[in-house]
Image 1: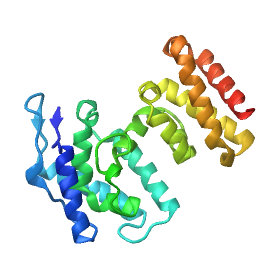
Image 2: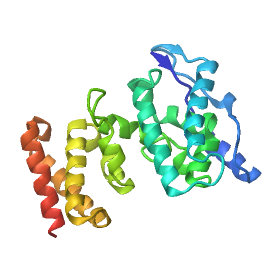
Image 3: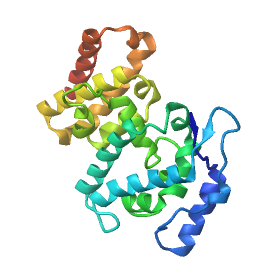
Length: 243
């Protein structure tokens, strides 16, 4: 397993303060001296491999307007393409990718210019590790909603859901940690959106998720077979849409 550099929150904040004082978007990796690695568990990734990761992320960003101004369609396309990239990126395995401080390093040191471009400014939560991190959220999205390489429509859910729907799934560990549940919920969202329209789905999705999580407190959802799980999710959406 390759060990990725890590960056703690104190150093993230310090680097962001430096960015803010300069009042310009960073355009190269910085803060290298602040990084650290896990003491055991694998070998350290090389600087050349990190540079290659930066290049690949930059290539996707450039396809969607970077470094110039971007519209919502370009930003959405960037998210979709990078989600698919992370799904097949072999060097970032689950052990390291589950660490918030690894993603803090990648966003704050390796590709801060891309993050500033994607979110149109220095938003602290997009650099700090966690479900709101600019890139970590996409890796989590891939893990939860990837239908597999054998699928005829592998990225059906990633291409169809709105940002609010992604948030409702990815930012709730009880859902995102179970890809079968996450995908059943995504399928239910698509079916309901076809019936009531995407514009009406934000409150519907939130009610459905609340009801599903409450159901999960008294029933082991992971024990349901596919048909029973789909039936349950569809009933939750029907109830939420009829509210």
